Image (cartoon, rainbow, N blue to C red):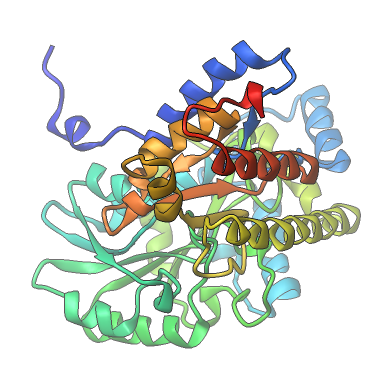
Length: 404
């Protein structure tokens, strides 16, 4: 059987490879004194709040489960529009909002609509691996530009200008970012967009963690800058609906019919049940619960990052959003006499029964020195993880969790 070149260009998703190993070992140790602590997957431990669940149940009972418009329920598009106005004080017409089958579908649609073979999209290194693969699937090329802690692991206008070539189509950014949890300062994002516009390019911003911002100076949508910016968002993270597979995108008016035509052919429509459920995300009771949960995510960050720093697993930039810690494990690797973050991740898996994600997925710029911790787990789980990591780093190389 001949495999397409497109499929062969897609690298393995190492996050999931590690997750499979963690799940297998987790089953083995589930009933021991040291069950696995999972800090490897970026999935909130909170699930959809009561009103959302009730709305889904009602949709099923009432039989409102047929196809919707390819662009999504008009009522849901209106509620998303109102959320932008009330939360961010930004006017985003519902006509520019397209509901999608998760943020992944939104990114896929954006790339299919805009990227041709040979086009290059500039992205920061490190960045979320699937984003570059959406570019590749559209036969474009993701050009990863190394970033530094001083730049908050984000692109700058100067770097975009310097990297822009004859085949460059635009940039794909993420703010806040996975794996770093850091955002682009609005002033720098404006400068980047000015460079892109001057080159006749496109600016796409993955904002799926936007609702989980902890710092007012960063927690602003890119849509406040210009109507030509394409924003990708999701109900998975802030709204705690990961498995419901529902997201949205905001695009310029002229792009709406193009995206609609692609969505009709590629996806028909997003899940109707998930859409009817998502209407309840914007009820005052639900929004109050989401804000309570956001405060809990911030409390987890405020506990966990200083603890990692104290262990020598240094987080160079305090995350201002999302639920990740991008930690330099090079000192720990030296102490344990192991090669890099890949080996360190499996070391913590085997010896401490703590599952984390090595940096390999997220690029090539010093990613061998970094691991990603997810702080989406509960505070008790985070405290157990810190205790085990502390014990592992303090004991002999062959010491196992059973002896700690």
